[in-house]
Image 1: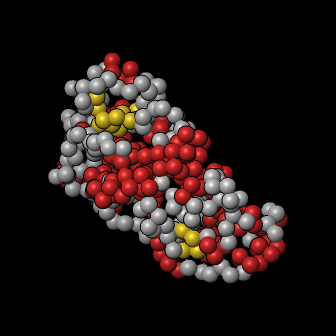
Image 2: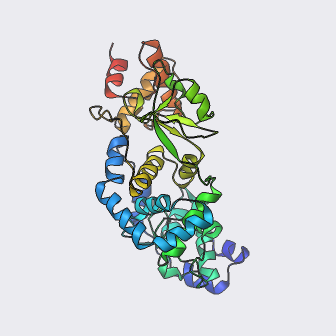
Image 3: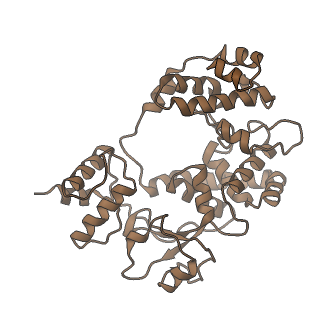
Length: 363
């Protein structure tokens, strides 16, 4: 790899000093291979991610760093509350952005093999950051997976989108709040954030709504959704969005949310609907708004990975193809669940429950 780094133009002294001190980190391998048996349902995730404490701390950070946040919002068109919310989600406002040396973590992942090609690309990017003089290798600190600083940029994202907002000649997402918030806003802008548009709105669905259409892949103008009877929870008109989708993270028994391009920009930061929803709701409440009005179906027990695998196997056995059973309920699994629900006269929302699993497994 050192030869590859030299061939890529990294200076020999940087390669020798940085890679020469890299340490194998067995804990990184353990964390990379760990797969939690239970996946938290949306409400449990949001209870933690959008807690009253995090909202209060976000409002304080918004006030304390108003100049930097407002400057970033003015320059990039991303609301200060959204950048603040990402900051809270990624590092609890800088309280915890990881303790692993980034070079160590990425060198370990590159050597371990499961994601070797990806880790080598990110390691080369980390070496380039050091070579360019943005930060010393020992100060390049972040998570076990290589994400760095207050808002957890991967090295490749840093190279492409980090900004020197305080004018000191370095892009510092570890120690400069102006650099942190400007870099985060810049990344969102390049991810498709549309200035002046909301990320989404909670809605009420009409009777007989086809829940198979509650997917990010189904997009149409919010005016078309309104023509089908979709309404805002407060009776207000739907926000004007050209490419809007409807999501029901907990199925027919939970809240429904209309989301637009800015929600998809948040997914570029972390490709998790729960994450993007948490950022949007945290930002809204940092601004003094309200959370969701509709209640979550908290009585529903989440499926473990082994239970999801059993569900996938049972659906496959009925000819409702979900792909290779892996314990992860992705789009193929939701589609299989929907087809089964339709066959037995249930609302086809694709949301798997223990009740549904028991029904599938019963003779």
